[in-house]
Amino acid sequence: MKIPTTLKHKPVIVAEDYGNIDGRSAYRTDAQGLSLGLAQWNDRGKLDISAKVWRYTGEKWSRQSEELPLHRVIDLAILICRSKLFFREESYRHPKLYDPEKPTIDRVGLQGDAMTVAVCTENERIDEDIQLFSQALAQDDELLGERMRVLARILKEMGY
Image (cartoon, rainbow, N blue to C red; front, side):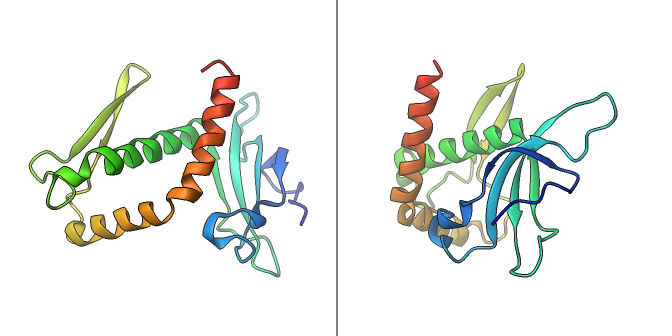
């Protein structure tokens, strides 16, 4: 299915077959494409690139399609990787899979400051939800691992 090019986000690089590889939802997802392009929020004289997940309801392109600045996409990847590392190497040390007295997992330095990665203790059902989260990560280990290996290879090829 072709991603629309007449909307405010102007696709430049596309993956129009994303519905075939959308994790456990492959072949039965409304996320039909990914694109990198000119952001819909661009003002005259200002230019940003964004990533977009294109959702298709079966009848029309959905308003629930998401557009993100590229740095946020990478920040999400950092958050996923750091979380996965925590559950693989640290959480098992705690009866609740985290330390309620020290919920901070890491502070990842970015732009002269840091992104705090922490367990959300404001969630009133965190003890139950963190168990479910851990199970889902374990269940998707092969799916996520394949993507992380590809990402690591590409980053290495780029010199990172």
